[in-house]
Length: 304
Length: 248
Image (cartoon, rainbow over the protein chains, first blue to last red):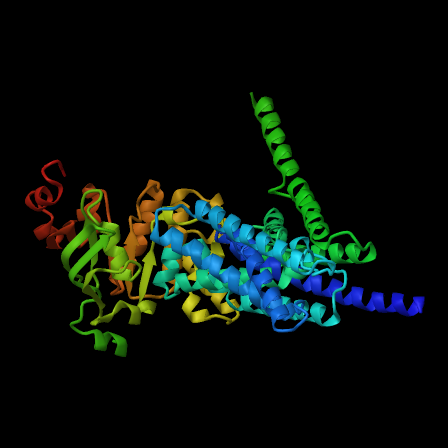
């Protein structure tokens, strides 16, 4: 019995870990494009705006007689409310004189606040029973179904392929939007596509990383990767790699020590990679920069 | 003559009719008409805030006009994109962007490569040839932020060359570049003109207009004068455009 359980746990844990790795690669790649376009903070608005949709989807499914915890249903709900949040941010920035950071802050907090209220309502309603929605805040692999892990892995791969297919127009839009428009690229549509990719990564990653920390998986891998290369293609590939390794390691540690939330472990892993990159990267790293500076000063002193 | 040239017979590479552009409630251009002549180099000149860059952007379809038409060889510019190359102002670019010089030039071939097409050896060779034409062949692997302003401008020109266009629109190509770059750029532009291409550039330095350009287009919100340099570039037209503060 015990053996069967551990075997079962082993199989599920493997699936979950692979799902987290696929998600990490997708987040790293999409995050690279987001970072090139200098819209990193939009991901924060998107992720926090998922919460009310998540809660409403749960309530809707329960009121229809379901269990309320079906992952696809919850993903759909969060996608709708994140999409609404995104629309509000872009409406505020284009139709009013509100700067984008203020619009992001406003939308993020209002949507999140509304979501927290709904979560509290759910907790009161399901007094005694665990609704299990708390896991979506910080991510958890506990009690994850095999189908959940497969959904996450498939979602990650789909987002990754879409991002790679759009890599050229996305890069040209980020580098110089005016030039890209002249070459016939609809830059507004490209920005929309980029936001859709970020939204997809967020929704896919809700279960494992959690909505509070998914931002980190979109931002840290690309900035870590940037230390190593000046070539966009390499930065994208490296960022995907760093995201993948972080997802894999974080989920594996979390699965072997249940109770530890997955999201923070994934983020801490990527932060470790970031720190190493920042210090030790050959030309852009801090240490390399300091050595260059020192060498130059020595050479100057010798010359003087 | 290629079939393309025959089809173009008598058509202006770039023609603007009654163009009005406004940013918000602020009109920038009003009822502007402009005609270009094939195989000529035209300077767009006028004071700061006269709408020179806006005119260029409206011609490219980057800025939407309130009214008026822009046509290239008698068709909307959106249908002639491949034949129009654009060299934007250097300031429009994020210079810390992780991209190498050769990648920037390859962007000029975006429409040839398509969404998923692989960059092949012949594309690299074509890009490298364009860098050679602007004297930047030794910088292909540099990150663009490591270049001087003049070198960056030459890379932009190489990107335009890679497109193999027939009409070249440049936004202040000589702004903030060194003398060596200026003469390198002008040599390339004259080469294009001599090969029958049409060049239109927003230009600031009035003293070099007669040496560099065949035609001028003077603008200050509205079109002021247009024609060959010896006819349209006179103290009177400059006075009308700049309002009496100019000495050439």
